[in-house]
Image (cartoon, rainbow, N blue to C red; front, side, top):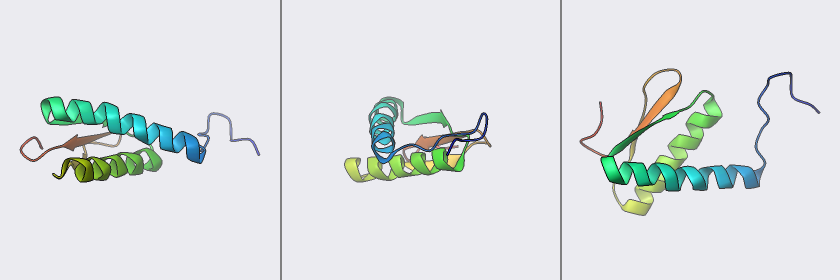
Length: 84
């Protein structure tokens, strides 16, 4: 089955795992450095992925990483004191 022209192709389980691992590392480094990061999220799948990464970072660091939608295209992950 082929996706519609210009449509998104779902990631395989392995690709999803790698994508989340990269986001965990890259976004985690930025949050550790400045306390927050803004990242694009255009689809519900991308938003769910960022929420999962925030939960994993919270568990890893032992402090909550908050997630909030900034608009229809971006989400912000931040530590306490670095929110809106």
